[in-house]
Length: 586
Image 1 (cartoon, rainbow, N blue to C red):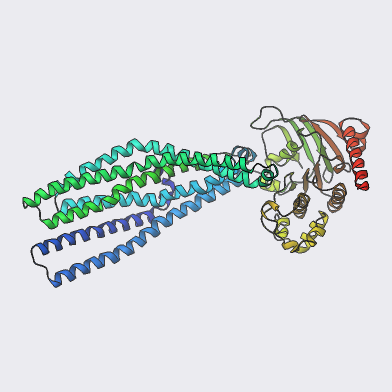
Image 2 (tube, rainbow, N blue to C red):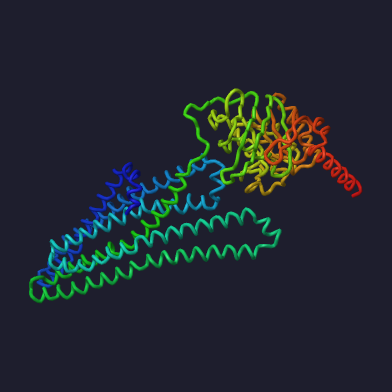
């Protein structure tokens, strides 16, 4: 029953609706007392040969009235109780989604997408069942059970009632024994469901790789293993849950046996009429639902409790990006002074950046290059405020970036990541995603700067062309250029291109860079790249390796140093020359 305590915050808010629903259930229970009593009266009248037309019509009228009243009351409690449970579902889904939007990179490294989806769907459904079917089952079983027992004692025999009810106490013992085991079993079952979600999501996203490497059969076998684990967990939970129904049947059978034995003796002794015995057995039959409902109730409550624990575990996660109470709401502008003495990722104690310092004047372009894994993307992550725990400062204008409101700060930035994400809509809406009210002419201008306009004009539906999930209908280069157009259309004060031209040829890359420079003459730009031709026009270039800056200067200055930059530039230039000769021969 602990899940009801944990959901008390919601029940307090909706107490009027739940109280109305429970009151309607009480009236339904009262209505259910009437038919067995009438059946007993009719049986006694038949036995005594005193049946008349008026007697039958009056009793039929009462039964009809009770049936209509019961229908209306059932509509009322369903609206109040089930309706409130869907309000809880909506609130929990909203809280989870808003929480997902607030969480930082560390959170998404810890939790897999499929697991988060399972929490937001299956787990919330289980909690809703507690607030709906769970409340109904608890209230209805208690009200119906108690009302039937009271009716049996008042209208027939309290002695026979005590005898018939004694076996029912065994259910409380069984519930206590199985309760904790069922909770643990459902917790494991929900965890296995999350694993299936993770596996399905991973396989669908990586379907091209699976097919290309011929791993379909192996992946199917891996998926089957997850399904088998889920089935095994569900079998255990339902096996424990299923113990209630046979036990309930046995206990109800015992109650019927003692009722027939002692009730039959009472009829023989004429201390009870046969009609009263029929009424008593009918009331006892009405107790069948509350008894079986106890098993269903434990199923609902334990599954809901396990799911609620999993949801709360997510909601208890805290973002490492803490907003100060007096965070600056203005969009920052001015120079960038990046001065990081040390930084390491939350799950790795080794330093990712050590003593990285550079100053970028407003309107300048900075190139960031270096060996793979050297720290280029880490610098950009800190500029994007993916992490705030570092030794040092990042000053934009005159303030530390951690003093700015996060949304105001990110509104300053146009970011094109290495892996581009496109939404399942048309090209136009993907480009104007950050500025959905942008005009068609603005969209076309951004497309022209990203060297994408010609490609779009050759598509069947032009700007209305659907890109499919994750942009599946577009090439890698087209995806990158859609993302660049999207960033340009937002007109950012700082544009960050994180190796975002790797899928286009050198000529297209140069055209895009020239158009961006012309469009953003007063805008600050940071370009991280593996291909050094992407940054040779930059006002300054830093070479990052092993988390520190090993070279710093302009393109010509770095070439004259004959270091990593010069060696890599010459090697890439020779490769491009050889590739050009091969293309000419082809």
